Length: 114
Image (cartoon, rainbow, N blue to C red; front, side, top):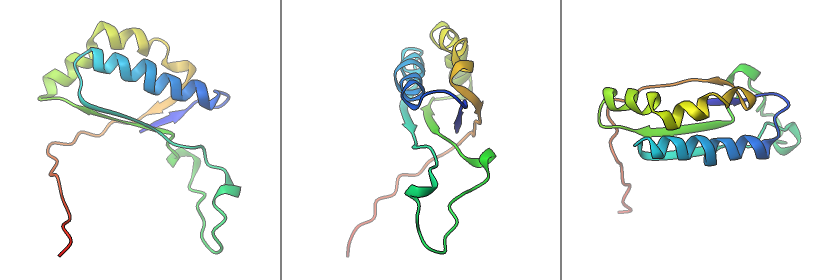
């Protein structure tokens, strides 16, 4: 999960996530790479009566990356690659925080109608 730096234009942030960081990770060998960006929180867009959508600022995330790798070593190699290192040097202009979560196993689920 990634947080956008205050003052960064949303368009520049999306371009960084999808075009720069995404391409660098893909070029470094990431498998099943998915990049997502989310709209900033604007109270007027969530006008549900009686429901508070304003979570604390430190829990608002503006992007997510899903990076597949065969092993932890392969993932570490991707992060240490020259392609990713070049982009990481520019991340401070767009990102204030990035949180990583390891997932050991995923199970595909298909819901069938009876």
